[in-house]
Length: 504
Ligand code: NAI
Ligand code: MG
Image (tube, rainbow, N blue to C red):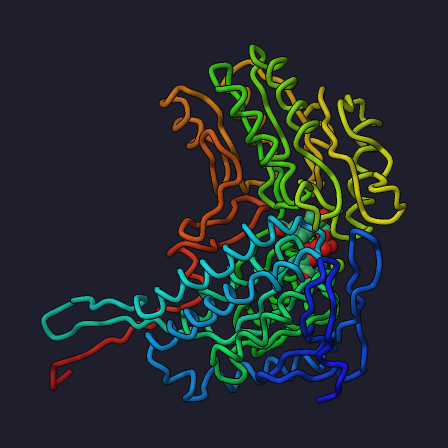
């Protein structure tokens, strides 16, 4: 193996580990066919971490063929479902065993606080794998009685080779959401990480091999979206694409995949409303509203980025919310335990947030908090840090009310009546998450039904649990991940008709 395919690194927190830098195909590390690489950057100081091989169209083809062969190979195709589950259990355990290293890599590459990487993301990764491990042998068909002479039964079969395209905001967790159900159902996978954050999933790839998955079942090819991602979406041997990312890229993927009519699950953008009624617990609402938009540097598709507050509690809520932002949103080094908000993942994302602050100001909204300049942390001029931005006096016509910013950026508007706020909440091309704060039980459930969204949080925000279906309506996506519902996307139903009569 060329020595640059595994490199010993020392992370900023002093942890040493072996970082794979190649393409993981057939349980082996290979270089990209043209030697092309993409450099991973530490967003907290803009220094290079390491250059990682980037797949060409030809490399993607190699990975897809490996996955296609593995699909039929007896070591996978004839493996008992319970044994598939055992492989997933073993992988989950390996993730737990290596969680400090995985969390370190995630924080180094992505900029999210280490406490979140370790205490949230890595827990989600192993628990999601474990949850789907349990489903491996509980995903079967039915017997359907028809007439006296005939009956039918159904079997659930894997969809085939699944192309999984991963975003940079939860690099390993989004991979686990997709790998768990795909592998439980007996598919094989070619996974493309986001080119900004490939390092944790490359380390994870070695754990896949160590767990005992046969060669070719899981292939991981880093690369540019426009090259490797597009090649996956177009490849005739790929049966399904699962994507998490922007709505614009989802449209491009649907177009590329239309040539071969691929199965598809899409989890895309959002501009999720959080509604606070007059009778709400205002402190509680402020706490969740803060967590719902400021966590993970605001880089969450379900972030409750539009806060709609009934007139009677508007002033009290705004004060409580601003106090939370002031006291809790400590921006700083993600390896520092006191840090709540690390840097944005890339320069592009930092600039996007700052540009939207300008847009909001130009549109006439009031910038209550936060700055139009990037934030200097610890005296060093480097790092993609921004101040959390809070806008008030925002109207539905404004771009900052309608467009996803994907950063620590929130807009507030006041409302008078329930009908008005339902209309405001639904005035969006998106329909991913939504939150309702009220002490009125009836209203809580009534409004939950009236909001156009895939998920509603009552007196909470951004709860996500591997046991509960996750996904959106409108332009927030197609299909569901997580929960039992997440299995539907990874198996097809074959109907087998049986005739017991000897003459026609
Ligand atoms: P993106 O949607 O372009 O990237 C997501 C993934 O898609 C990456 O792996 C990328 O390489 C891949 N990709 C890009 N172009 C592709 C193509 N033509 N064919 C196949 N795969 C392709 O997101 P980007 O540009 O990194 O971020 C821009 C905005 O997208 C963010 O500001 C945010 O609004 C949104 N976003 C939403 C996420 C979510 O969780 N829903 C996650 C990441 C970004
Ligand atoms: Mg990075």
